[in-house]
Image (cartoon, rainbow, N blue to C red; front, side):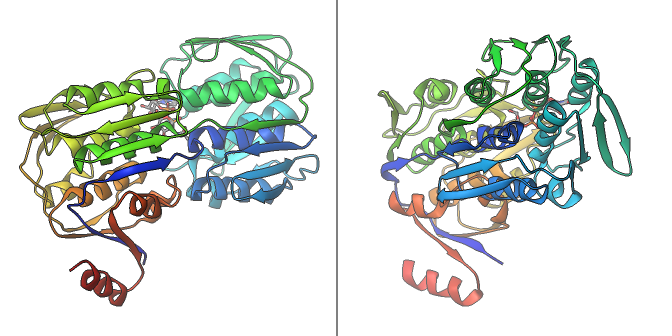
Length: 430
Ligand code: UD1
């Protein structure tokens, strides 16, 4: 089983290039199936989630040509099946974006109901409510969500919770419905805007993405397009916090600083220097980290996908911090692992109370999910001694060449496959 072996203690220093946004890519790949013409997508991150979604698309007849590592050409003119199988949805929840895309284009789609996920309950009632409002019949049979419509008609839809997934799914279906749709209380995340821009580049008529009211005039056909995916806000934020916890000096390049504002604001609050330029942000951690309080919120609030990374940093700060998780109820599972490295954290419901420790010490730890896994790697980089992180397949879902990028900043980290390789790493790092 592949693991990361890490020897902590080196400040990360240098520049790192941020890839395309995984969460935007998943929506855009699914939306690319909505035209029979060819679509070219650039800046596609080469991570496990995008690979799995591409496989799911190929399984129903979509032709995907890889031009290079980050560019694909997609042609969906020969789709022969509207059912996405269990296997794909088990591996990646976002396969359910094919529901909205195929419902919009073919008026029918069947996707296995996504199962439980390890960051808490993740209902899809708002997706279903949105499809029904557009006139689709939605039923659940034999573990499948089956949605079909004779005609999709635009409607006024108020989402009861701000949901990225529901906003994206409903936006795709409504883009090809008859008439006008308004989505109120829509998610405002950068990837929602990126999807709207992509659909508009294919001939859709979507306005207001990035605000909480999205207005869509349905069109009967979408055409081919060439599109570049936005940079990944969470990958960038993860490297920014890696700089903070290792007392480093890191510039994340190819980013949109505006998307990183809530992250930069917290880094400033805990005593880091943050310098923004047009498409880069530099984080310098020259002073001991201070404490702060954080509550995760929908964009533009502090992202839940950055919650484990900031907890790792606050775990090494002076003073007491309170972190409240308001999006997913079960997102502190990694705290036990962090405690084994010396963190003083008490979790009560959706709140973590963190008493800053002087240091972390290396330990064998397991990545419980994607973002917490990345956060534990950062903790290992700050810790004294060697850490071994298991289950890195979760991290590889969303970070391309994570250890290679960290190595380029001076981190002592290797991917190891066997006990022998681990011993070799330990000998190498002394
Ligand atoms: C997306 C991101 C994920 C991020 C999350 C919040 C992708 C592929 N994943 O997940 O990385 O952590 O946004 O920024 O983009 N909810 C309902 N009913 C629904 C849908 C959601 O009650 O029908 C609730 C959820 O349980 C959660 C909240 O709404 O409490 C937000 O979830 P949502 O924004 O939908 O998250 P995802 O789209 O699953």
